[in-house]
Amino acid sequence: MSMLDSAKRWARGIKRDTVALWLAARDPRVPWYAKAAAGAVAAYALSPIDLIPDFIPVIGYLDDLLIVPLGIMLAVELVPAGLMQEFRDAATRRARPVGKAGLVFMIAVWILAAMALLWLFWPKSA
Image (cartoon, rainbow, N blue to C red):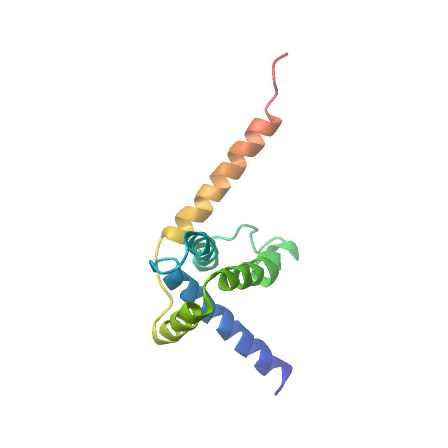
């Protein structure tokens, strides 16, 4: 198997696990902490807005190559194995979800970051 085939298989697994985590975040059998992690990772991965824009050289792709896969691996570890396999099976049978939750999540992160920076760097009167 070539390196390109391995990379394609890995990318398909990441896409499948993203949809599986989206399903896990909505399932009542999943513990709350796993739901929170799965929901945050799925919302970020499915969002059309990145935390670090891709047009920034090198760093722009850092979230796609490191943050998303590491977040997916963490969330997958938190979901019980039997349930995760069930969600993976269901994810292979359905299309990528289309929703605005990821967009809203990323906009909220950007707004909170902007507010924190304003608070931190706003001149204080003595």
